Amino acid sequence: MRRKLSLVIAAMFITALAVINHGCSRSASDADDNDDSLAVDLNDSKIKERLGVDDGYAFAIMYGADIHGSLETCG
Amino acid sequence: MGGLARRVSYIKAFKHRSNMEVPTLLVDAGNLFTDDRFTASQLPPEVMTRNKWVVKGYGAFRHDAANISYLDLPYLAELLKKDGYDQRLADYPFIEKLVSANIHPMDEQYREPSPYVIKEITLKRGASGKTLRVGIIGFSEPKPAGPNGKETVYAGFRIDDPFEAAKKILPELKRKTDFIVALAYMDIGSTQRLATENSEIDAIIGARQTSNMDEPQHFNRATITYAYNQTKYLGELRVYMKGDGSPENQINRYVALDSTIPDDVPAQDVVTQAHTEFTADQSASASSAAAAPKSPALLAAVDSPYVGVETCAGCHEKENQVWLNSRHAHAMATLEQRNQQFDNECVRCHVVGFQRGGFQSLYTTPQFANVQCEECHGPGKQHASNPGKGYGFMATPSGCVQCHKEPNDPDFNFSVYWPKIQH
Image (tube, rainbow over all chains, first blue to last red; front, side):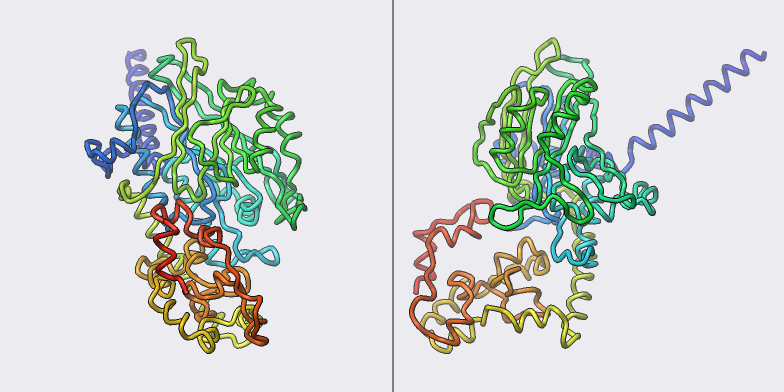
């Protein structure tokens, strides 16, 4: 009986952890992984051209610099 | 061109196009904060607001690291104050992703910035299943001062020799990681030296000088690429891996963030909020400056070496008519239509003498709005008080491309544009 009770408590603890972790993974820091908000039509020919060919790269580093305090589109 | 909303939109598309199989890091090579009008150890409220939204926006849209350049130090001092740091970090976790290996606080009131961050990614291609530890480290050159001078102390921080710092820290980072990315805010020669002297580095993202070379350069083990000014073109460095988990090749692309890329809606919301708050601060600040009869801003306008178009037109009426019919005469209206009249990064090319004793803001120096005569011909106060030959030479097209450069005006063609303003 005591063993069963321990198992139930352990299962509840793991479930609670999973719920908490799931909540954290959707925090603001992951906002760009929200699939629903994809603004680009991947079938658009201009977008396809801009994306280039998927030629098997393993990972990518996107980079920029010198925004000097501006998040806005300019020029 | 550029902007956070298009950048985020493109990266989402990039990930989806590859069925979310490709881990994608997002980094900034430096100068992300503005130090405009930094005086007496303080930044004006509207400048603080702009920088605050950069920290907020970069954090919200998962930038993995940003290099601290000398230009970032006035605002970094605000972020790294020990007093209230824990609350600030809770509000803006991105603070911990600001890196520099050679910038250190001068006194005890500031925390030490991290020299690097380590990001773990799980590969699904090349070496499928492998967890790769990517170290991202930052370096900045000292603040330029005068023609050949350098300032190694700025805004409460000391900027050490980046090459000595690299030799000290890179071996440690190499032991902890599988792939090292160095962010380098320095000139091209120094960036190449960093690669030549340090075989630990796999990739260097340089900034401060724009390169138009799509093909990366290779020095020692490192691949070097350079970021475009204001991220109007997003750099995309693709890394290919061998089956054993070692890097095989790197290919660089620049992606134009023009109107082809639609705005990401959540990112645009952040940009809009930032703009609204910044504009309100700017208006309040400028109004109070205008209301004060002897404010520094007004005194600067009185002492300006510029005289404004109305004075020029007193003698050069024919030329003035050509100008009135040109788009130069309506340059500020273009910004006002886009609600960007307070964005200094845009304003500088739509006015006369920005940060050179001319235009300051629409409230304090409206007489210097629009691209007037003196923006091309030079300050005219002396000429107006003593008219004569010898004033007004303008080098073309080199003078024009100071603003009509490719990221700002990709369609610029001197032989087409020049007849429209010729006089």
